[in-house]
Length: 606
Image (cartoon, rainbow, N blue to C red; front, side):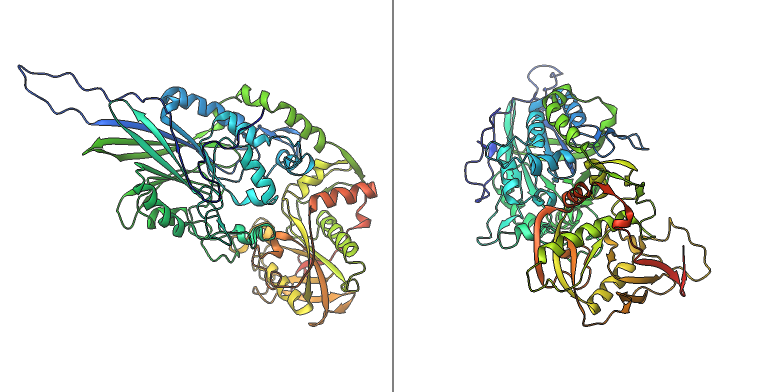
């Protein structure tokens, strides 16, 4: 059905003006208690009170159904979680029935249109940006459920601004981003806030503002799309600018929807000019906020109370688990006195979506889209001579990761033919993203290959020297926990030193090297050679590298500032599928090589 272009915006999205969403039905007024006593004695009327319920999701990442497209089966995990907006819809309907829909708000904290084959399909295979393109399934689901607002997440930018703007145009609610600014004018490029009015019988209306804040990391992670177009200042700075404005416009309640975790830290190694996970800092530093819906960190926080340093008031934070596994619920109590409403209590909790069934309205709405994507991911593109798995890929050079580096080398080598860089040797990096990926012997499908490369990364070619590559490998090798010669090796405790995630450990193909885990970090790379000869500092290579790493993600040395000689917008996972389709047979002899090994004092660990 045709969707109206966000009627409620009175000014263009670029001006960033928020607006009132009026027309809420009257809430039940607090009843005056019957008078007691004799004659005409007057009793003070009880104070008027109003109860508002704010519901929130975050990091939905394209999960509409309780379905694992990579396993082609119902989603299940050891904790018994369920996923998907169809479940969230049921929880939301229950709360609206209980509280009165006119007394509720439903918001989201970002990362909506990336993360499953469902979202990939409608960005790339049957794109929403085509002339008569489809309506994005996440837009259809969120419109049907009746969201009031959503903050921008960093993954909203993964497919470029055109896809994001098209998605935005398909929504019946605003995408908020007070700190997503036009790079030239420094004015908001998206609406910063939305104001909603709740009518109360026998008392003035309650005005509720929702301020949206996104993640400053977008400037690094999606640099190719946003550089020179958008800029992303820190959350605290922009909240400090907007919250007083919202209060001066008459907001009785200020809710922040923040695509930013609560820890006060940044991801391992990402050198951001601002704190990545700053939701609690916003609560602490910016007075005038009542509650914050937290996103980005994929953690479950039923309720976190933070005291504002200036006002002394408590701000309540809640983060529901990602993938629509939880719904945060804030209960806000207001009292009317001295001619104005004020918040007297806020409490939050999370509800588990495994406690309800799918809403049939949502499953019916999107059954066709779901069926198309299931068919797409189950296409057979080749056959494998043996089973390939990532189970040991963190600590042993696994053929399944060599498949990624081989594809990247081939694509970049072909792209550089006829250029000034064609004579340079091409090497490649890849990370062991998953510990459970498997390509089974026999038929190989798109979903087998997608499960190997779960991110929508694209390929970049950078020129690096031998000295720079040595430093890069030393940095990567910090991932291993120092383990003395003769000490027992427990593979469960061998990796993730300093909480470094698996995706920030890189293989580099084409070179040969040992990683001596008995040595201190910074002096572990031994016997580094290229073509059987010790690597010389000045020798030049072209590194085939994913865009996250190329833009500085993980803060690997030299790569972000290295000369870029080529890049493309086709996903690496698509390149893998093309490569396998062209070969027909997936045989490790065509791509596997042992380039690195773990050692201690020259003796292999495995």
